[in-house]
Amino acid sequence: MGKTMRVELLGKSGEELRALMVSLGERAYRGAQIYHALYAERRFDFTTMSNLPAALRARLAAEASITLPRITKRYHSTDGSVRYLLALEGAASSPAAAPTSIETVYMPEATRQTICISTQAGCPVNCHFCLTAQLGLVRNLSAGEIVGQVLVALEDNRAKLAPQTNVVLMGQGEPLLNYEPVIAALRLLLDPNGVGLSPKHVTLSTSGIVPGIERLAAEKVRPKLAVSLNASSDEQRNAIMPINRKYPLSVLLDACRRYPLRPWEHLTFEYVLLGGFNDRGDDARRVVKLIASLRAKANLIPWNPGELPYQPPQPERIEEFRRILTEKGVPAFVRYSRGQDIMAACGQLALLETPALLQPSRASA
Image (cartoon, rainbow, N blue to C red):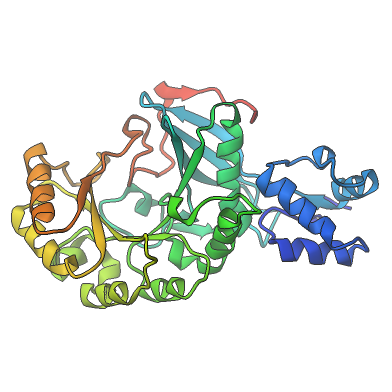
């Protein structure tokens, strides 16, 4: 068959793969075997799926595809992080379209690795302190393109993986504005028979899309939720996050109060500290009033430099902010972003070149 007629398997659920096998005249359990080989074993070449009969492998090689995001560049940070520039081979609806570029960040530690993935190419939300916003929205990603980022990062680092994998949906895009593909990808990531990640180790970050938060609350399988707060009043939030005009703080926090937390779970409020704008003691005290009634914690993120009219906060402002929240009963942690030197830190993903640090691309291991 021609390339455009091939069936794409990456992103399909176990049910979809079983149905596909039945449609090809095969036994349904062959779909479960493909599912396990693809997501749990990370086998992307049909010839290596030795649990399938040779005739079926040959047929799949002729009629189906497993199209992973393609690594075009790797940027290596001095802290060990890697920013991947990935090419997506055409939109899901138009395989012949030109490749779309996105970014994924891999952050290794001694006992775990964290993979920051994108859910859209670009972003439509236009947070003014974020470089990604300057790209605008290029397009939504498919479930396969979302889960494929995790598979590519794991495969590229297969020889040195730590026991635990964390995934954060904090790359390019607003996850809750690409809801169905994001949820489909999360089901694959969180399925014990799929990629097999724990819900405790997967976090979705949103700018505050209230209908999406309400939909997520009803999902049986879901990650942890992080909400980008970044301001202590509507006036302040309107100035840096236009989405606040549609879902102001009262509406957003009401949705957060109604969000059903599991026994082990806290809501996370992310707060990017912009020097001289939202980092004063009075801001911290207003934040306490906003979220103290919730089972929540605050991650304080000093703004990462970029070509935008903001400044990082002073160290004493960061510590004062953290202290005020903690003393008022709100657990608060300062999160210094990794990968700043390769434009891989929070708010820096904008497909920017850093040629001095560019390492030659190589085939995945």
